[in-house]
Image 1 (tube, rainbow, N blue to C red):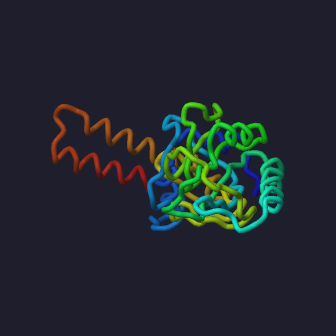
Image 2: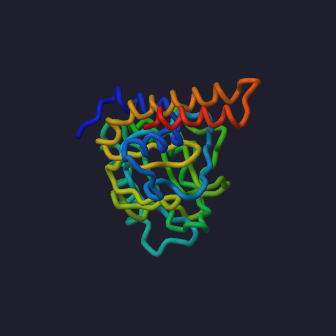
Image 3: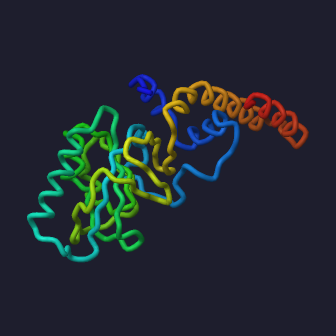
Length: 233
């Protein structure tokens, strides 16, 4: 199913927790799967959410490579070709294979500039980020930690399944991510989300409006919560 740019732009208006809540309505049940499990670092906490199709790769940097320089260079250029060939509304999802020992920043001033110019909107990575004051404007960076060095960073695999922050992602999957984390959704769920979001937002707005009244008490909470539950159904 091909999603319209208008629908994806609509989903960018809402933070990822709202999307997660709306997905529960769409699916008719809560879930303990399909979302990130560990905290991340947003280079710009106020940036718009990343919404798009995953372009996936793996990197590592902790130890020196055991491959020759020519092989490493060839794979890096193949990676940039992969980025350049990305369809519209793509985002990068990069797994740092060093995991909790990740030390090498792949994402800084240069790579955010190159990727933005090659047509992708941002990156979700468990790896290291740097150059926080010089990142390319309009390119969203969600990383695992901040660090100063690139160490021995190199691309190890391109167009492969990855796992970041406890969330498994396959190339081409639709992702919604912001400073809170990431969720995975199907195109069919994305189509149903705007209606579900409206129900969630309206129900929450009414509940909060009642809660902020000066005479709000437990009895008013029971009444307000009953109305809230009915609006969510």
